[in-house]
Image 1 (cartoon, rainbow, N blue to C red):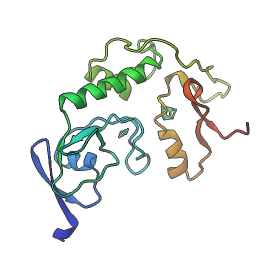
Image 2: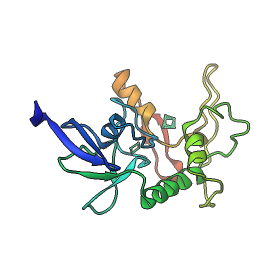
Image 3: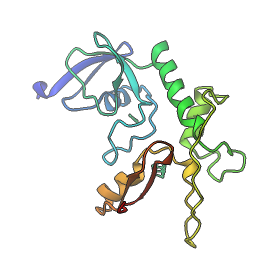
Image 4: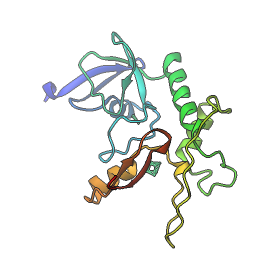
Length: 186
Ligand code: SF4
Ligand code: FES
């Protein structure tokens, strides 16, 4: 049984967990919170947004904790100044290309991006300039799609593919034109 366990240290706390567990999950088991945006357990585990980055001693760069699995003896730091600054920049980049109508948005107060921006004290638009300009799609009587609010986390793509088993949508186009759509022939 022991050989299926890995021991590592996260923020000074010794954690024993099963082989194959992600750093994010191991931290959760130890009561340590790592912020996430694109992650949806068992549905969207693609390491896309990088909000969950951590530092691992002896490694260059950041590890993406929602996809990086634990290793024996690993020493992880989840809230170093470098990690916090990098998460702040990630949020700055997302928000610089996002609608800023929180006061009138129906999701205000129930929005993960807004909550993280508040938590990380993202107060200004650090990267002003060109932004995506998507036409609001309100053709359906039941749903309005405003891609100016989409952060391309791809959760909807994963839910369609992995939960509904359909796979009808994906990210199309590039750069500021990127959006989630059904497949189209060019
Ligand atoms: S539309 Fe899809 S990709 Fe865009 S923010 Fe919503 S769940 Fe994420
Ligand atoms: S939550 Fe890990 S990369 Fe998005």
